[in-house]
Image 1 (cartoon, one colour):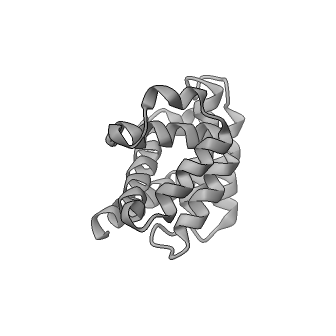
Image 2: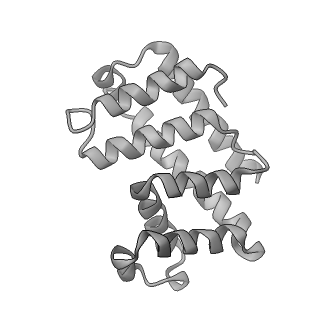
Length: 159
Protein backbone atom coordinates (compact mmCIF):
# COMPACT_ATOMS: atom_id res chain seq x y z
CA UNK A 1 0.00 0.00 0.00
CA UNK A 2 0.91 3.65 -0.31
CA UNK A 3 2.62 4.72 2.90
CA UNK A 4 1.85 8.44 2.77
CA UNK A 5 -1.68 9.06 4.09
CA UNK A 6 -1.59 12.60 2.68
CA UNK A 7 -1.32 11.23 -0.87
CA UNK A 8 -4.20 8.82 -0.28
CA UNK A 9 -6.35 11.56 1.23
CA UNK A 10 -5.45 13.97 -1.58
CA UNK A 11 -6.45 11.53 -4.30
CA UNK A 12 -9.73 10.66 -2.57
CA UNK A 13 -10.57 14.30 -1.89
CA UNK A 14 -9.85 15.35 -5.46
CA UNK A 15 -11.88 12.50 -6.93
CA UNK A 16 -14.82 13.30 -4.63
CA UNK A 17 -14.47 17.02 -5.32
CA UNK A 18 -15.28 16.44 -8.99
CA UNK A 19 -18.51 14.52 -8.37
CA UNK A 20 -21.16 15.45 -10.88
CA UNK A 21 -18.77 17.56 -12.93
CA UNK A 22 -16.80 16.72 -16.04
CA UNK A 23 -14.63 14.13 -14.26
CA UNK A 24 -17.19 11.32 -14.09
CA UNK A 25 -20.33 10.26 -15.90
CA UNK A 26 -22.31 10.28 -12.63
CA UNK A 27 -22.02 11.12 -8.95
CA UNK A 28 -22.18 7.41 -8.17
CA UNK A 29 -19.25 6.64 -10.49
CA UNK A 30 -17.15 9.33 -8.85
CA UNK A 31 -17.98 8.08 -5.36
CA UNK A 32 -17.09 4.51 -6.34
CA UNK A 33 -13.82 5.67 -7.96
CA UNK A 34 -12.79 7.59 -4.83
CA UNK A 35 -13.73 4.68 -2.57
CA UNK A 36 -11.86 2.12 -4.68
CA UNK A 37 -8.77 4.31 -4.97
CA UNK A 38 -8.68 4.98 -1.23
CA UNK A 39 -9.19 1.34 -0.31
CA UNK A 40 -6.62 -0.05 -2.73
CA UNK A 41 -4.04 2.62 -1.95
CA UNK A 42 -4.31 1.95 1.79
CA UNK A 43 -4.74 -1.84 1.76
CA UNK A 44 -2.20 -4.47 0.77
CA UNK A 45 -3.75 -6.88 -1.73
CA UNK A 46 -2.21 -9.85 0.11
CA UNK A 47 -3.32 -8.67 3.56
CA UNK A 48 -4.31 -11.77 5.59
CA UNK A 49 -7.40 -9.95 6.88
CA UNK A 50 -8.48 -8.77 3.42
CA UNK A 51 -11.83 -10.60 3.46
CA UNK A 52 -12.89 -8.75 6.63
CA UNK A 53 -11.77 -5.45 5.13
CA UNK A 54 -13.78 -6.21 1.99
CA UNK A 55 -16.91 -6.76 4.08
CA UNK A 56 -16.31 -3.44 5.87
CA UNK A 57 -15.77 -1.69 2.55
CA UNK A 58 -18.92 -3.15 1.00
CA UNK A 59 -21.02 -2.20 4.02
CA UNK A 60 -19.77 1.39 3.80
CA UNK A 61 -20.32 1.88 0.06
CA UNK A 62 -23.62 0.50 -1.23
CA UNK A 63 -23.02 1.44 -4.91
CA UNK A 64 -19.70 -0.44 -4.85
CA UNK A 65 -21.28 -3.48 -3.19
CA UNK A 66 -24.05 -3.47 -5.77
CA UNK A 67 -21.61 -3.21 -8.69
CA UNK A 68 -19.40 -5.99 -7.32
CA UNK A 69 -22.36 -8.31 -6.83
CA UNK A 70 -23.54 -7.61 -10.39
CA UNK A 71 -20.02 -8.41 -11.60
CA UNK A 72 -19.82 -11.57 -9.46
CA UNK A 73 -23.26 -12.83 -10.54
CA UNK A 74 -22.39 -12.17 -14.19
CA UNK A 75 -19.30 -14.38 -13.80
CA UNK A 76 -21.34 -17.17 -12.22
CA UNK A 77 -24.98 -16.79 -13.32
CA UNK A 78 -26.01 -19.91 -11.39
CA UNK A 79 -24.91 -18.35 -8.07
CA UNK A 80 -27.95 -16.05 -7.91
CA UNK A 81 -30.52 -14.61 -10.28
CA UNK A 82 -29.02 -11.36 -11.59
CA UNK A 83 -32.47 -9.88 -12.26
CA UNK A 84 -33.27 -9.99 -8.52
CA UNK A 85 -30.26 -7.87 -7.52
CA UNK A 86 -31.97 -4.48 -7.98
CA UNK A 87 -34.76 -5.54 -5.61
CA UNK A 88 -32.45 -6.91 -2.90
CA UNK A 89 -32.12 -4.92 0.27
CA UNK A 90 -28.70 -3.82 1.44
CA UNK A 91 -29.00 -6.40 4.24
CA UNK A 92 -29.60 -9.18 1.70
CA UNK A 93 -26.59 -8.03 -0.33
CA UNK A 94 -24.45 -8.12 2.83
CA UNK A 95 -25.57 -11.67 3.59
CA UNK A 96 -24.59 -12.76 0.07
CA UNK A 97 -21.18 -11.08 0.42
CA UNK A 98 -20.63 -12.89 3.74
CA UNK A 99 -21.49 -16.21 2.13
CA UNK A 100 -19.04 -15.53 -0.70
CA UNK A 101 -16.25 -14.54 1.68
CA UNK A 102 -16.85 -16.88 4.61
CA UNK A 103 -17.47 -20.10 2.72
CA UNK A 104 -14.25 -21.99 2.21
CA UNK A 105 -15.23 -23.35 -1.19
CA UNK A 106 -15.82 -19.98 -2.88
CA UNK A 107 -13.58 -17.72 -0.77
CA UNK A 108 -10.43 -17.95 -2.91
CA UNK A 109 -12.48 -17.53 -6.09
CA UNK A 110 -14.35 -14.53 -4.63
CA UNK A 111 -11.13 -12.92 -3.43
CA UNK A 112 -9.63 -13.25 -6.89
CA UNK A 113 -12.80 -11.88 -8.50
CA UNK A 114 -12.76 -8.96 -6.06
CA UNK A 115 -9.17 -8.12 -6.94
CA UNK A 116 -9.89 -8.26 -10.67
CA UNK A 117 -12.96 -6.07 -10.13
CA UNK A 118 -10.94 -3.52 -8.13
CA UNK A 119 -8.15 -3.43 -10.73
CA UNK A 120 -10.76 -2.86 -13.44
CA UNK A 121 -12.23 0.02 -11.42
CA UNK A 122 -8.79 1.55 -10.89
CA UNK A 123 -7.98 1.12 -14.57
CA UNK A 124 -11.04 3.20 -15.41
CA UNK A 125 -9.45 6.05 -13.46
CA UNK A 126 -5.78 5.75 -14.44
CA UNK A 127 -6.33 4.80 -18.08
CA UNK A 128 -8.32 7.95 -18.73
CA UNK A 129 -5.40 10.25 -19.49
CA UNK A 130 -7.55 13.32 -18.93
CA UNK A 131 -8.90 12.35 -15.50
CA UNK A 132 -5.72 13.41 -13.70
CA UNK A 133 -5.95 16.85 -15.26
CA UNK A 134 -9.70 17.12 -14.71
CA UNK A 135 -9.50 16.40 -11.00
CA UNK A 136 -6.17 18.14 -10.46
CA UNK A 137 -4.05 15.16 -9.46
CA UNK A 138 -0.35 15.91 -8.97
CA UNK A 139 2.22 13.68 -10.67
CA UNK A 140 3.06 12.04 -7.31
CA UNK A 141 -0.64 11.19 -6.86
CA UNK A 142 -0.91 9.71 -10.36
CA UNK A 143 2.28 7.72 -9.70
CA UNK A 144 0.73 6.38 -6.49
CA UNK A 145 -2.35 5.29 -8.43
CA UNK A 146 -0.21 3.54 -11.07
CA UNK A 147 1.82 1.83 -8.34
CA UNK A 148 -1.42 0.68 -6.70
CA UNK A 149 -2.78 -0.75 -9.95
CA UNK A 150 0.50 -2.59 -10.50
CA UNK A 151 0.54 -4.02 -6.97
CA UNK A 152 -3.08 -5.21 -7.11
CA UNK A 153 -2.62 -6.61 -10.64
CA UNK A 154 0.43 -8.60 -9.57
CA UNK A 155 -1.45 -10.02 -6.59
CA UNK A 156 -3.99 -11.58 -8.97
CA UNK A 157 -1.23 -13.54 -10.70
CA UNK A 158 0.25 -14.65 -7.37
CA UNK A 159 -2.97 -16.11 -6.02
